[in-house]
Image 1 (cartoon, rainbow, N blue to C red):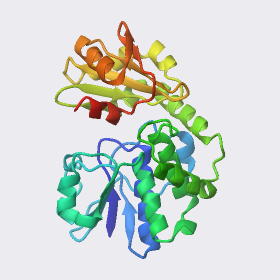
Image 2: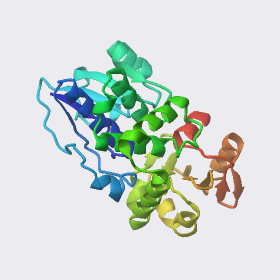
Image 3: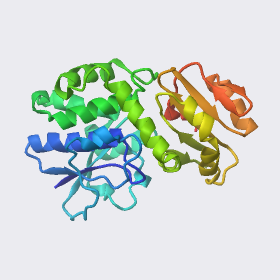
Image 4: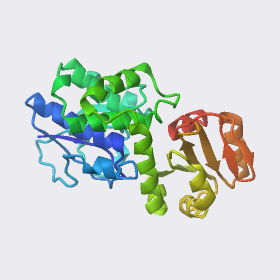
Length: 298
């Protein structure tokens, strides 16, 4: 059996899409596979997404002969003994830092590439295998939604033509309508506001130098007017005085930033052009967290 899986901290829509769609593709190729997702679903998995016929397991006891395909992550430290790294046969990711490790281990079966969404890579595999017309409606919808989410509705600078082409091709199989992006991000907001504490915890990272939270919303101004005390509680919980919250406001095409640390505010002003009034900053364009990490050399 081939197990298609990802990290264990949380499952976002890109992980869900990639794992389920790629396991579907492997089964179409007569290679028995199943998606196994250990992390809890985060706010990017909305009520409409949950209503689709999702096909994955949240628990699995690997057998010695099981093989693994990893999607949307490449850091070997995030698997918490759920994956035998010696049995990994393939990887698909758009995060960088471990490409040399996996290239040495897997050769041509390591697919770590500069695209906006890992879902784009998975769709391209359907195309390479000439099985685009066999994609299920659920897989098409998940892949399309993951592309919309990860590219911030194509407004993020990580977006490339491959993402746009994949979205265009998937649209005819997904049949979600032209207003799906707005509807989707509105539903993400609903999820966040139902449990802002959990939403922040499920999308925050404590690095050695800094703690960073991220909340992607259609309109971030409401969150910043009501929920900053919760953000502070979550981020100070990492035990690092250097922290910030970044929230792409997709409808406005800007990020809202919250930090109480003067050094952090200086760095964000210098490197991403954030303009601060007190502890609240605003950028002139959309930034993903991984883009901010890159320019800060973190």
